[in-house]
Structure formats: structure tokens, C-alpha cells
Figure 1 (cartoon, rainbow, N blue to C red):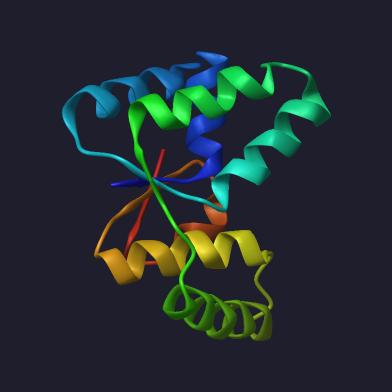
Figure 2 (tube, rainbow, N blue to C red):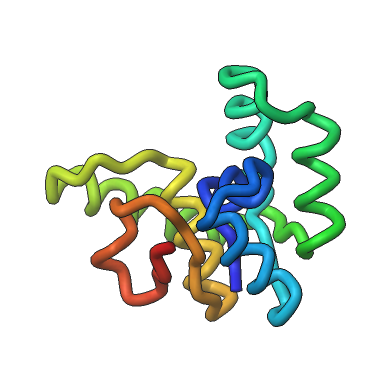
Amino acid sequence: MLLDTSAWVEFLLGTEKGAKVRKIIREKELFASIATVPELVQWCLRYNLATIEEAVEAIKQNSQILALTEEIGIRAGELNYQRKKEGKKWGMIDSIITATAQIYGLKVLTKDNGFRDLPEAQVL
């Protein structure tokens, strides 16, 4: 299972949804897209709720970080184009995370409802 940035945020905040993430962390092999790291760092700086070091360490200790490859980049560009064409509120990082999950055959655990219509998404 690949954790979206929003799932990591819930985990770090220790929310009710974060408790669900914590349970999943104990039960499954987890992955994170490298694109999650800068997005989570931005979140830490914007809301000042966790240190950058704590956030990055949480990802490293609880998952395997998957690199951005040319194949992921191409699929993410195609996916981003299609989602925007459909009028979805969607960003390139979402596309990179989704493309990573698709290429590795993983489900995406997310809190973001923008993923809800995707077959590989599991929304908290």
C-alpha cells in the first residue's frame, strides 16, 4: 500500500484517521512516493505542526520510498492532463503518487476525496 501525503499528515497529527493509518502501518508493507517528501515538508512549514526531521523520519521508518522514474513521469503527465480535462481539483503531485501506485500495483491510502473515483484509491 502506498500512503498519500494526507495519510502521513493524519498519522503525524495523531487524529482518529491517523490511528487507522497507524494500524495499517503495523499490518502492511508500506510505500511512499518520493513526491510525498517535498509535499509533507511544505505542510510542516505551512502549519508548523511537526518538524521536518520528524516528518521525514516517520516516512523513512515506516515505509519504503519509491523513486520517480521516467515511466512514472510519463504516466503522471497523462493522468494529470486527463484529470484536469475532466475538471477535477487535482495536482501534479497527486498524479505522481497515483502513477507510482499504478506502476507498482499498489493501493493508495489517502484522506483526499479527489482520489475517490480511482480504482486504486482507499479513502480514509
